[in-house]
Length: 283
Image (cartoon, rainbow, N blue to C red; front, side):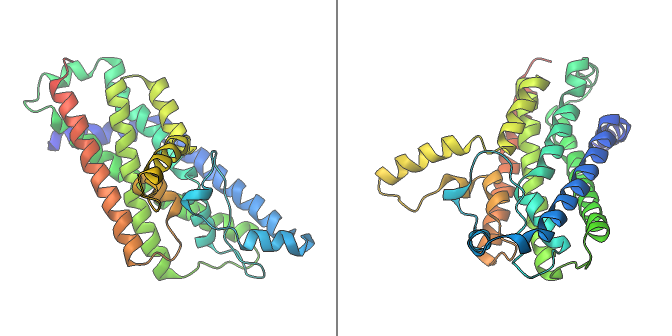
């Protein structure tokens, strides 16, 4: 297992696409911050009804739409904090999009090149290959989110007059849960890529998940559940992407436990599925 981890870490840090993705992510974060600062300066020109509409906008399973919307939650008259921008980008799954693109590339690199045949026959338990990749992707997720936070702080420092971080306790609690949720999403996309063994289709599915395309299916399930008497049931609340979107900036104990539970459950389930498939598949 140690040798597998060393090999996968070597592959990850030698993959040029990882650094390209990080650079594009940093540029997009800074660009988004510049747009947010420009919109913030124009808020004084808004009518009272427009400001009230933005202030009353909330995130709930009923109003999660298709696509990717970066909405800064800063109230009128207050300064945009680093935490506000981090929440806006994480809630829109902008960072998750960059993570899953690299995940698909990394997870299928040795499969598409045929190198998996060389190492697959040398290990007695092929499921260890999945555990090794999952461990490496966990480090990648943490590094990516750390770069995201630093880039966001840099963007706020450049484009916003008053640099403010936000509440430290809420920020650490929020980021801890988002790290687990993003990692669970990465493991899901890793398993999908290994199952399909096709970069194109795996990438399309991963991007569709980031763009809330599955909301259509979730809505159908919710309608069926409502007809059966479960009017308060919302499938989106029990999914990884749903928790990434619905997680509040000030999550209470129930929200924290729900997010952690969903992240751990999906991570273990998808890792087990990937391990079982690779163990039984003829490579």
